Image 1 (cartoon, rainbow, N blue to C red):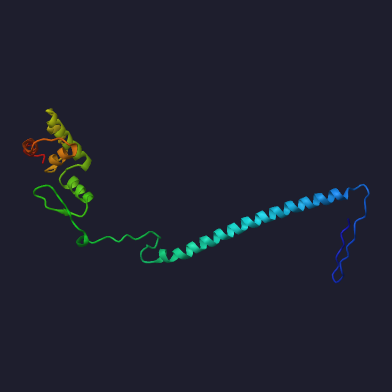
Image 2 (cartoon, helix red, strand yellow):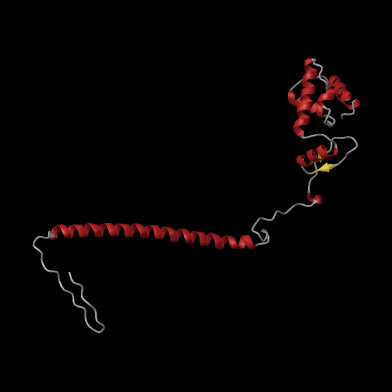
Length: 191
């Protein structure tokens, strides 16, 4: 097949190929037809992928447009992080009272109270205080003599912790036993 040459200003002419009796034109037609179908299917597939990508881009653009106002509003800092509005001290309801006798401080959360006990009264963390108090109550209920000094050597247990430990363990000790246990702790200057 010869290709026509184009010259500016001239009309293009198309020459037909010469007939070849040894060529199976019917088979050639179907080969070209199947190739065309495959090409059309891949074009359609690429078109669908492109449409999905365009839709994703549009969705990202909409999300960005919707959230630009949020990011630039006064609730967000210049770096995009959310600003946390803290309550003032006078806005807090301070329901948690320090259990130590000479200390009448009030706190707005149990975590703040526990931190105060740990730092100011050498009370350790809440879990350690509760473990020691429960061990003391349980040992006293079973008639065991635990070395109280060793258990409470590093911690200053708050008052009434023995009573709450007895309730949580479910040990029924009469109030005299609980008072004597707490008095022993107080005498050793642990409470």
